Image (cartoon, rainbow, N blue to C red; front, top):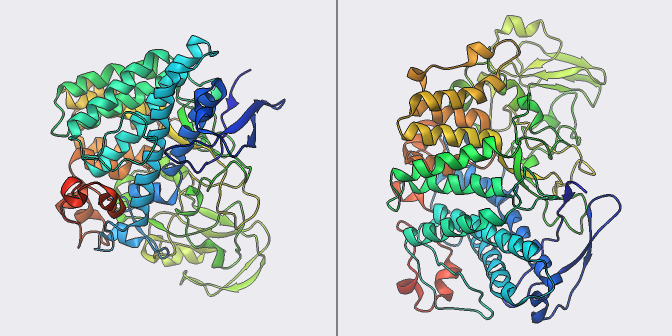
Length: 556
């Protein structure tokens, strides 16, 4: 049986008990789930408890991927996205003093990642006593726990710097905590992944789709080396350590780029050949937790415009994230050969509310009429003349008319499979790692080692795939064009909206300067200390010794 999907309940977990699920393979090839409560502390010491404990640990990935908090931490406050009209979290983009240690996102993320870590610790500590489990299965489950623990600590150390390093289970609350140096945190992450890799499935996708595999762990370990290299804990040798890991992912497992960039995020195509690892969501309210919410944040207010009303196809527009001028004019400035602007952003809307209307934003016309399916709005991406716009029987939204409500919507995370037009809890899996990023990571590692020709060849693989048909040769760059600036822009052309940018800018040491240069809402307030997030106040308060034992990051 292939690609059995790993589903799980987004459980409430304590440090002492893990609530389990009874999971059995059903005839349709997915995992049926029966919620079980009142599970005793010894349940995790059983073979069934081992599997359910790992599933609980995986569910903690939903704290970050596809959530409002995960997106706010990575999309807001960057050079490529700023705030749109709506939402109560604009201060995360604007870097005001509202972004402090009482921040709900900070507290939730910290607590949930540590719950996931403690679940992994419990699995690892107790698995040595479990009987009745095949040795290979036991080794794989332990490797999965190390992958998850490493993943969570990697997020924590990037966001917060020195953090509490817990590598054994806390059965009762533990107030004796401290902030371990980032060198120790990175050492623990690397050890976990190096120990996990040999025991994970050496295939593109696990038979239980959603479980960590060897290429997923190699991709993550390469990213860890790439990131540590730019910290005081790293060295140039980290780039050399990262390079073979990325090459393994590209060469050894049959993972391959899809021929068409647009197909990577095609709804219903989440299990495709380019995906290395994804975080699982479902269409069941019982097992979907809060759902994948990314579909709402990147959309403009199309539903109040003439000829339009909200529907599932075009999405529920929160108008939360608005692309910056730098994104539209520089990152995606070249659109003759490169297809990614057209395939990333929505450029037209078709009427789902026929009738006669007055024009709103397009001053080239006054009255407009639409039948069902007619084009109501077109976004050409350039400032089309008023005379040219007047020839069109629909409104043309040009960049000069963009506002915090009207701007190009991003396609990638849209979810037309929701049950109705108001549903917030989306059901699409969140693609956390894909091969295009591996190529970009490899190019970065090669570039940092001075291997410019190799980096150029690597990045050209991505660029050829991104070309309009027949434009592949024009998309290739030469070694003299392979600069650091080009690398930072190419990465965003490919990965925009995939929860990378803030972490990328921090890794490169250019977060503050890029926000000041390209994000007008964030520029006035961002300071050097904003390269770390605030430690949640509840963590400081519950530490034995308080702020003296667990100090706040500077500036907060």
